[in-house]
Length: 462
Image (cartoon, rainbow, N blue to C red; front, side, top):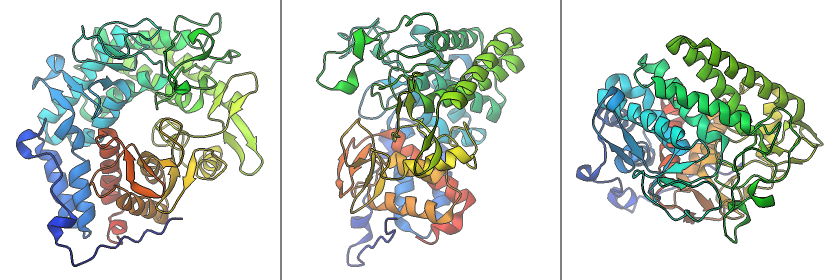
């Protein structure tokens, strides 16, 4: 375990240690009194000033820098959310970026309108192309990936088929409904989007054919394209759903991506509950439930592997022929994140074994260095740890020492910027990728806020 000590010399002034790096007030995209109150509450009650500084920088970063909201409510609300340094809206990232703000909507009507706007825009994007993962604000814009060999349309930034791209909007919609009781966004177009999600999942089970989706890109990066004329390596139909790409936007090796299939099971059941209780649509709800049950059974039948050191664990990817890829990636959904997405309880025996595997050198993308230990992935480079892996480890842990260690390491590895990054070098956190990555910032804020509410005594130890 990495040493959690973090020393700051008293010879340096506080302003030099904690400079003002948050976006200036008059330049912020969105202002929420509820979020500002939470920041003040945190700073006034946490002794460690660096934690207060980091929380102030990271937790509101999505609102400060990435949202474009039309200031309307209900059916007319519309919110475009960029990831940070890329001017495009990912279905996954946009849902994850606003997720931690849901608990505050009861105190801030405008914040509720903003999240309603995200849901409304995601519905439009799914109806436009359920196989696309990222879109532009301008529906006629032709972007940098227009030459990809797939069914590209204007307004689509990238058309990488990822199961989780259709799960995250359901997760956000379901939690919004449960939190607010508001059913305004869940109209006829929403029902159409759910039926399209079901159709897409069914197509990608590839029971009768290889399906309508293929993707190729002229590139030197193998993770940016698909083999065999864009359809990927063959699968043996098992009931699982194929995902051409991972949540990292990297191509899968074996198309049955297990963390994303877990996510699909949870999302299908949430959508079925909404269809039943909001729309009274039991026919489509039953179809969703049936598919969820089929995928869940296939996970249990095919995705559990006996590891020589850790016993029964979940594979990361399989093909239904017996081939398997034993690893984990930092991006969510991951094997590590299964309880975070309500896919499994933290006490599940196979998950506990899998968790130990993920955080070990048996995982080829687990790295240990001078400053940190954690999980990365092939998206960037070897020896690059993603803060997201440490954050998810903390969010899914019930152990005080583990949570404390995760926060301590994250405090030491922001590269003196006051923000989280996509990844950092295990031996030098000043070598990092993506200086502006809102999902990582907001997710770190989520970890700090959760710890503040549930285990404040841990923060007093830092």
